[in-house]
Image (cartoon, rainbow, N blue to C red; front, top):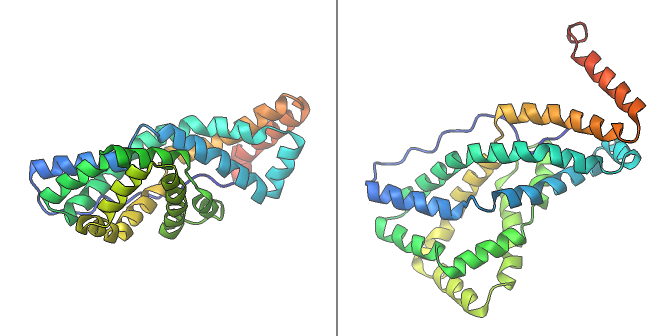
Length: 253
């Protein structure tokens, strides 16, 4: 059964040459603008239903169970959600640290100040807000369900599609401001860094703390049995007995 990510321990943020406290602070603020915490729960709410839906479609056994007990997928989403939110809160500071180090490695302090102003501008904030409303995750969830790491190419494809949808919703003035910045020398320098940024995005997209992976495995079975018990207590009891037998010492040995 697929889970949203893997528990492989992530590499530590890349080493960065010594920087001034001011530069470090600017990079941290930029990282928080690039990876905002506010839409975290909404991102998870958009990710999980699609992930579970694709999982049901790709696994005949689970598909049959969903057909026999409608709403099984919704029960799994509800069970996974609090775990994924907790895990995301744990991972976010590490993700931001990596991203801050990337900006500190690639830009001077004056450039960083200009980037911070742009990322905090109404135009970029409108683009980012629209992007989260139009978030596309088909390629990344497809990678996860095919039992492989989410690739930078899949993230790039989803971001490109999301960006196209989000841009169409911007006002003409905001579109002009963003285009003007991205076509400037600094904007082009940021674009040239995209491969490194995508590598960081992919690294943390593929990380799930070991405790979260274990909890998801447990709550998934519990949620399925609890949902089935609403309409078929006998089947739920059989499933619970079968699971208890598989986890007994005699069965494991």
